[in-house]
Image (cartoon, rainbow, N blue to C red; front, side):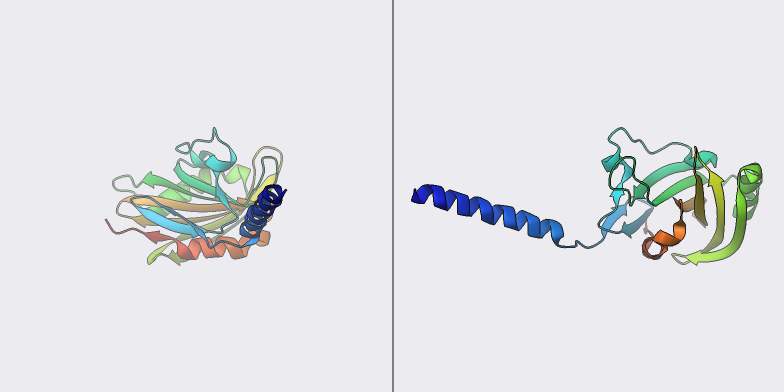
Length: 183
């Protein structure tokens, strides 16, 4: 009988520890590759964790950029939330980042509404910001794209959600944590 009580008590302690661990907020998570890094909220996850068959490396929303990574606030497939991605494109010889910026949005001008363009500095680099609405499938998404050029590569830091304002605090923290890694 004593052995059963001890076993039950041990199981209860393990269960209580698991519950407490799940309730304890963890610090931010981090993503890093050879060229850049950033942190994101602990309750966000890489798309590959949410969708096991997900693959980066595709054309990011038909903007001509290769997606390097995407993280999301979505917890379960089918939920809505916010998404943050970093995508890259080599800067063509003789082209300026401003030219590529202007040409990219000119190509999708018929698909977007409410465009708002500004200058933005991030990670010690001056760049461009574009906010707009764009349909993707059934819903209209709000996008915030930040363009930075470093060492002949254009980095597109892009966030989107049905309503960006709901996630703006988390997205601002992600953007402020973004750094270019020294090679």
